[in-house]
Image 1 (tube, rainbow, N blue to C red):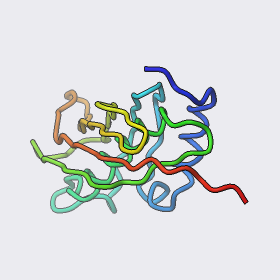
Image 2: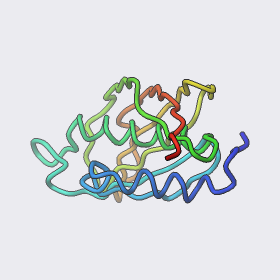
Image 3: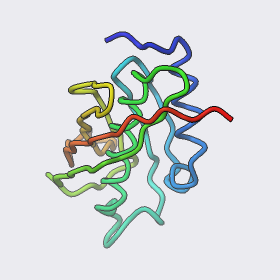
Length: 145
């Protein structure tokens, strides 16, 4: 895939990490490439439910951010995207030192982009796929003043 914005990496980083929800979740990117991103969210108690498992809504939010960010890498300058919908399937209990989320574009369009997100827990014993998501994004051209 080719990014129409030569500054796609910085654009995605700036837009996504400036969102209050992203700041609350406390994740950061480890990879931003055209149509493909990876983010990591360290374990924090406020992101968990019973017995220290990451909470399902947190997992869904991170999948949404990863899929949306992957889609954002393929936007032209002056465009953003917003979530239309996402589906998350929890596949295993999410307990570990961090969540690692891989987002990738499945189909990029001028109006709608569809991406997938795989969510892994990571710990000293290894990585476990704990959730899979499908994310639909609406591409929006920002208006100039």
